[in-house]
Image 1 (cartoon, helix red, strand yellow):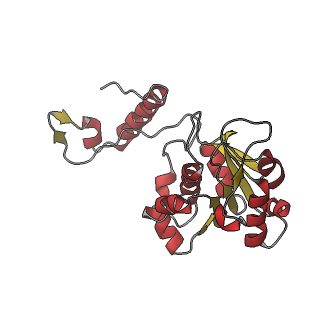
Image 2 (cartoon, rainbow, N blue to C red):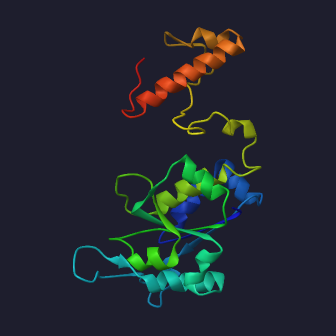
Image 3 (spheres, one colour):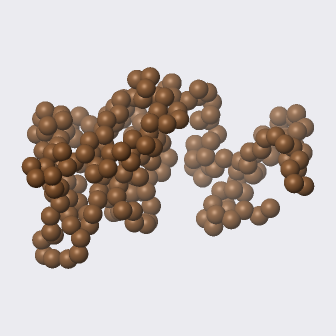
Length: 230
């Protein structure tokens, strides 16, 4: 994966998340290409949604607007874009995003993300224009821009040359099944009566490694509640 395109209503929201830090530097250096497109630019009247057939609350993003955006950007019929790119719709019913999925995307073809908005997206965007749909979790957002930014950030940091130290990817959270990172400490060694665990100051690398493995397992068990015993 070398290029990411995001089609949404608020591309500035995605830009704000991706133009900073290591991801922003990777884009600036050309390690990965990134473009954000406002779907409203591809609508003849500036509107991208309409009332749902069958009635109901909310407005629905139109399939013809998304298809026109694809055709103008890629120069091929909208249905054909997914033949050469991974085309992902942000959708609550989509596949839950996890590290395994991130690894699939980073090692695959170039990525296009279509962001849901308003009351939903015409189902034909998913079935006729996209390769798949993805969800950030079992909750509702006002739009898919946050999902697109999260996916792009997670994918880009896996690419060669993005992180200054590639070893940062080894042993980090979700680098293996059920793996989360261990607790990390830095200076000061004593703060407000709380000390850094002595093993980390011992210089004994075998004991440090064993401690981190034990703490990682403990953290994995605590992940379901988000609470950590002191």
